[in-house]
Image (cartoon, rainbow, N blue to C red; front, side):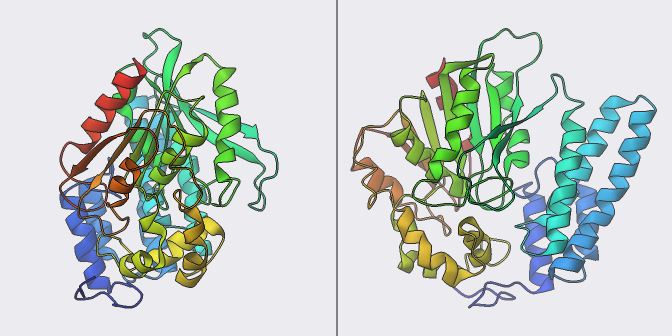
Length: 380
């Protein structure tokens, strides 16, 4: 990757001024991680940042989150539920930024815990409200987690079921809470959404590994026992999480109608040469190594690069299996995950649908609309 002013060429660590520039640019575009956030309040926080270190970073964002939470409590007590819902959502958004990109420090862990609480206060005021579900999982391997936790959001109460369902997840830094706001258009078109964390992040009970797809088994079982339509289940894995969509499209093809890999790796992405090339990707807010290493329970780039080759779906023999209908999309200039993985997938197994968009990681332009239209058609 070319060197960028204010970014350490070895670690990818940004200077404070470079960080402010990165955040302001993403605010201008309302790009991840700024989803449905109060732009003016966020700009004030960006301007007041004193450090990129975890404690001052988390404290600065949480100060504004706490202010929104206090206002939300007042509004809810006064019966102003629509206004309270928006304030709770903003409390969540700012607490989410406090833990962003990943809680690698106790201050960010505390912010993550707060953010989940704020999220639940917000979506409890939606109509219909969002359910938080926990189902047990045999042989979890992340300490303290023995169940799969996910949210269930149904279409408007006036719609009639059983509803087709999309199971949605993000990647190494965008977790199940963030995927909720991004899937409103699915629910508007009659599709229920289930929101889960991919292996190794958030509340997932297992680390990433060659058998981590077992984490979805109890989710499929829960859907089969619910009021949702178990014969019309789709998957959307975003960013790194797209990898698991591709794998499940092959390993669980009898349980799903269709799957989308939106920006995830398949084989080339997990090779050491690509990892060395992408570790300081200018599109990422902080060093990718620690964020990626956490999915295996590691701490740094060396921990990650020692394990990531095992994820290759080519080497596992998965790509040559039959699959459910699978859509592969990404930006053709992705610096984080190798977009050439799409071409590789097309050379193996069942025929697939693919689309490359302009831009970097996950693409720019009508990517989301393309994904939603394709999935809704598959679930019709």
